Image (tube, rainbow, N blue to C red; front, side, top):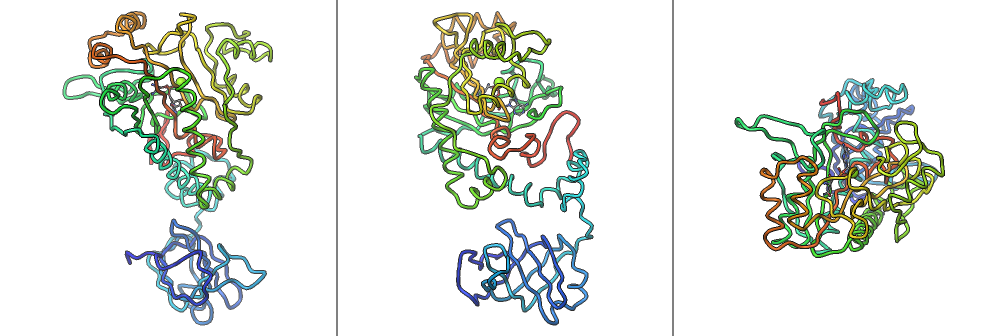
Length: 441
Ligand code: 4AD
Ligand code: MG
């Protein structure tokens, strides 16, 4: 039984190949003398045709969706005018039921979805995931993560595995998950950036794909408590190098995913309007974005016109990105709305060499910057942000033992997928999403 459906060559045009397949009933349709069963095995869907006595047994007559079974028979091309996945069908001569299912599977048949009950859908996610769209998102997710690994290795990056349990914050104290750690205080990591920076001297350019954790106290379409963070750090670079690397990476990953016929078909199906972004991406400075928002009368969070120093909130950011309707590198944010480690803009010390990459429909999918690499500047930054440098000695040492101009970024995998697959919320791009109020299943 470990063979699964290996014998099946879905692309074979041969007629009469004998196969044995294992899977679950995705769909079944009874016609007078014939039972059509679409089996699903994670690699694809196969139409199986049961005729004669096979269609008349008690098991066949009471067959329910999600029942697992084994079927043997011959592969045939479907007759003209008939429809089956890949234009093949399996003419069964034997089958065995392995595990029955109760039927009435509302979650899988999208009935719950139609009722718009999102919480019920999430409670039933273990079954919802068996559906065509939800499972396609998971399969593309795997392909995207794989493509990041391939692309980084092509570019000569080394993957490292930073810890999830840490004693330092990266993106502010407000979203830290704290936990007891053998009598000490520890946190779930918000970002592996600081650790990646310490790898540069022995790996050169490096990356990781790890979970990050944020105690986000609001419910939005794009915030999770636990998400997959694709992070990289580049050594001896300029800010412009960082931006062109990001374009190369994002487009390279898309080319790999769209170059694979199976995942390309899934992207096409989930997001028919998707288009490969044009390079170079649009560059826009923070101050220009503020002007743009004022011009378009999009107010800030207090309902006032935007002004220098304002955070660009999710709604305003999305409006801008949707209107411009192409990827944007939003750069040079003011110091006070960004993190302690960011390199100041040498031209204007109120600003940082920072970048957010914004995509239509989602907004920010990447946050990155050049890093403050001068020892004194970093010490001043700790002080400015009220951070006790003691716990950061290992990070600070990076500046004492052969510092370098370097920079990096973090990309939220779920946001990347929400953009690529036109998903309304990042929750639908997770295997089992975690956000405020939900930690099950
Ligand atoms: O902008 P952020 O907070 O930047 C960092 O954490 C940097 N230290 C990363 C680095 O330079 N290595 O987060 C980076 C990205 C965001 O652009 C977003 O895509 C994603 O991580 N992200 C989240 N995704 C889902 N849920 C959340 N709560 C997220 N917070 C950030
Ligand atoms: Mg950010």
